[in-house]
Length: 496
Length: 111
Image (cartoon, rainbow over all chains, first blue to last red; front, side, top):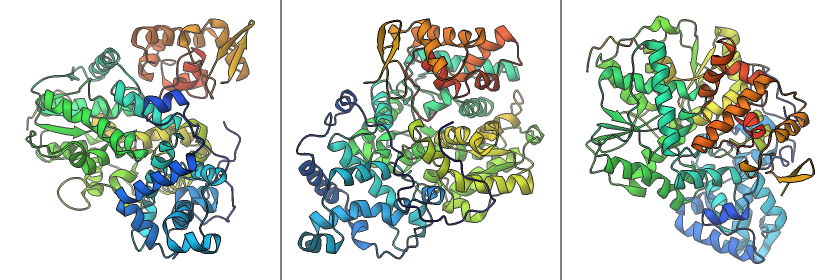
């Protein structure tokens, strides 16, 4: 394990002592020139990078009016200061949202406001410099774009948008994140974040079918590229690789099978996630999103369903229409979340469930940030909170809630979202997970919780990695459809 | 570019020690990497490495963890054909540490 101290679980989230520079050393790897070029960015910083930087910042401010408004309207009230999980976990004041934003605001004042142009430092305006750029690099990659701070900001200032803009500016001068850009490149050229080619996908999906058959005696199919299927499932490719992700994939397949739904996976659109969003790049986001719409059109499906992935859902729910819409060729005009779809089937009585199959678990549910704060689900506001809980209650006898100050729209980020899920920054991931870990530990101690249910691939990977740092078994991390999969009685077909 | 020296030859690796060109791999390199981590490679470690190489040659990607554990179960029985045992073999995570020893690139994405 890396050389740092894992925060102690005291059972309470307290505001830490301010420690300037506490996480200044934690940096993502910078992408190599070859990779930068492959994704259409300059290979590295040029001698005139400062001019390029300011020019790009001007473009961004013009294109994204919200960013300009956010830079203008902050009154430094301080409501956000103790709301970021990275600040709570490190004590580094640069991880206070207002002070993170200040990295951009100071440059904004210097080059884009009269006061800053005239009075410089007196107006808290700083020239762009190597040192300041390095701070941008560190702290705009220590933001997981989770938007918790924006819930508490009286003006609704969204640090995530500022972070996305900052990353876009850095990419444009030749300074990109290796982790994020490798993924963008694979998603655009191979079709998914892992880089699984069609043969690998097909063989993996067949393996999953065999797994289901072995466990249940029923061969629930994972249909591939089926033209005319009703449903196209776009799910994170992590579901085809990692644990516990794969158990939710088994769950989706079993649900579709039992309800008699004609569905398909696509080798072309084999990724629900969209890292173009994390780097704030419109074109990459559009290119990655387009695969899903091309597959939906080519396969002539009636609806698109998103698997368990927080930011995939945000990209599809909130951005698809603008990027590659409209969806007039679909019978169901907008993408649907798998949780919404499954709950509807349960309510219609299409699935036979045996709750006792999950009796070994006392389940709690962690709201994932992109579902909780950046999108919705179902038909009424707040359904993104109630639907997953209704699902869990339909398949489990023991469900307990964590502190309401840390659930729903106030949920803490897992600490690995927004393009931060990479090993070289494991220290910030472990420390950023601290607030959520405190609450989980608390409910473990008080109610015996032992299953941490999720609907996000990043959350699943992040918690699997950080639980052991806090002395908790990684096996306690799981998916909502994993629980459904456990409880679903196969072969007892009742029909929709 | 960082490098790894072995038997008078220099191999290019990335920031985390993953071989840049998987085709340059040889068994000795796995030993060098394991030694740096303070691990001794047993027959079970080698089974994982060999299986990863074979799978990668066929599909240009590492297999799903579950495929790997199933393969182990075939040879060592159910009590060792699971993720827990894989983590015992490769404490830094089977997908990543074992891939590195096998000369494969690091798996990317939400994993």
